[in-house]
Length: 84
Image (cartoon, rainbow, N blue to C red; front, side, top):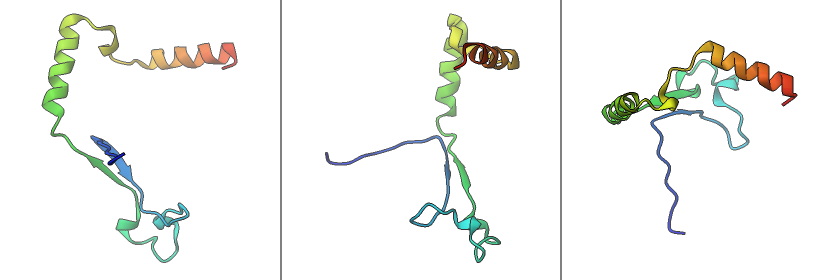
């Protein structure tokens, strides 16, 4: 293996000690803004996402429909009934 690469359009960076303790939970750093999580978003790909979404709507793709609250509640009810 030569290398590993990752790519994110949105991610949250959490500054932490080697043991995983978030820096913002340390008494000496609690007042430091850079000790807290940072949400990073990169919108350069938005025009491409817009084209994909438009094509999906034109084709009538089932996966592009808006997610409704009722859809989520239905999943929760079905999972509760099945014991999953």
